[in-house]
Length: 125
Image 1 (cartoon, rainbow, N blue to C red):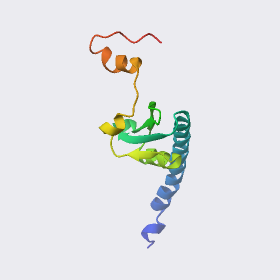
Image 2: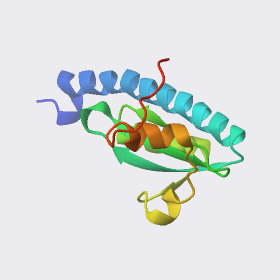
Image 3: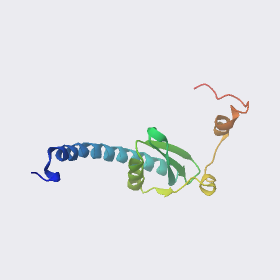
Image 4: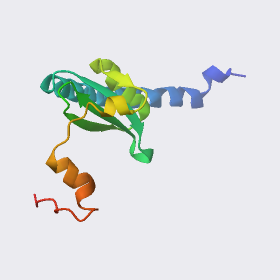
């Protein structure tokens, strides 16, 4: 009787994992390049990973100059790998000290609260 390691089912599973790993690695590398470009444009960057359900994981980026942005990775593991490849310092949570680094302007204030509070509507794109 063949051992568990020699069964055809195990061989198929191992073969199927390799293309998925390669795809995740390519996705992480692409995200890492985007993180690097953001960091270069903003004098450096730090980040935080946030689960967003089935959509994946959001990589929130805050630049040294206060600029901010985000990217979405398909999984938490891919987001972690991308951050690692980019050399991004990660915060466990988006706490007050980290959030205080974000600089917002009139657009963000209108977008985040203005519409809900009866403020001016966002201009048409």
